[in-house]
Image (cartoon, rainbow, N blue to C red; front, side):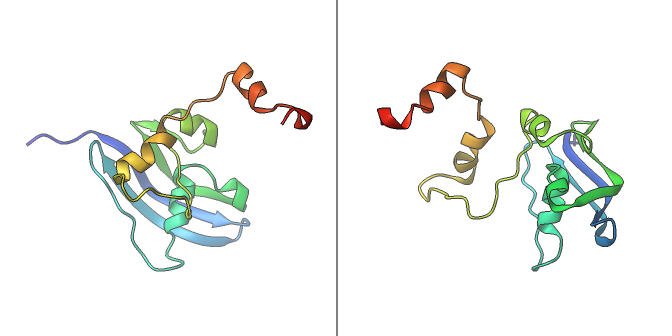
Amino acid sequence: MTTPNIVLSVNGIEVIYNHVILVLKGVSLTVPEGKIVAILGGNGAGKTTTLRAISNLLKGERGEVTKGSIELRGERIENLSPADLVQRGVLQVMEGRHCFAHLTIEENLLPAAHRRRPTPREASSRCAPLAAR
């Protein structure tokens, strides 16, 4: 039996908010290629904080990963910007996003995964003056 490639590896991370409040300690998980991994737990268990650590969105909440490592396909990603992570295919779908019942989970997530930035011409055409509307 072959071992699947590991796409994401979280190894013993610790997260602290406001330089004082320890909210995660020793969290580890792996996501093998082609597999789905779920994070389950009650309110306040650290699910959202774990996802924010992976997608590097902690700074906006005054948090930081102080121990451990996060690797995407073998590359350490803790110091990459959220924009750099999106370019590598890592994004966090925020709670409350509208899902379409007739689509599968994967079909609901694909538009975000294949997001592209508009060209300057496309962006300026979306910003027509109010008088012209």
